[in-house]
Image (cartoon, rainbow, N blue to C red):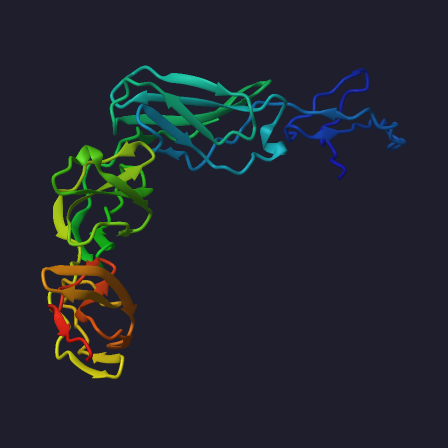
Length: 351
């Protein structure tokens, strides 16, 4: 677009100053002569000239926090600064910060227009230390304005343990653990995960197995049946791990305590037909998945080889060779082991 400079220049002058141009914009200039008769034709355009100036716009949305232990994380608006707002070449940022109460600023220069984050690392920084932070801009023509000063906290591990931790045994090999998640704090980093530690009674916590999850429950599997386990939960953020919750114990489910009942059998020719009542597991017992039948040849003062048969039903048909006495036992089968045996049932030999 054409811009007319309102002030005329005396005829004897060979130069003029044009003010209030936008920085980092290409301009062309033309000159016209004026006398008492009128205005002459414009000159040919000059070559393009790009204006320069220090930046005039400060970074916005300066914030920070999080990171790992010994870090101060500073962030600002992540959108790249438009070229017209950079106002010149070699655009970058100046990050300034100081511990709260200190009069000395620490400064660092980030020579990139795309920068939106700076991490200051110092092992001497105490967790959750407060800093005053401001971010400015610069280019080849000089420094621009700084943002308003904000307070940012250094990284800190979670300071508290999850609460209301409890668990329930699902089976002989699985336990579900639940807890109340740690609420977010304005001064600490977001919780990124939880670790559930579990170890068998008699072992040390240092030997615990660990399950890591991002929600507020966890499934522990591969456990021993009818065993006591201790459980503890701790939170984790980007700075590290927090304290463990008080440990508590839980017992995995055990095999059924009741044997199969109401056993009936009927011997016909060389076959025996058996049936029995289903074993109902109690709340603290493993679910019955089937039955085992143990068959052994019986002679006085001698027990022959035991044959083990399995079924998912509450009945079974067996082939019984003649001329031998047999002992038969029935017990429930679960993933946590075998239940209580029915006791031996003697099947007399067929004559």
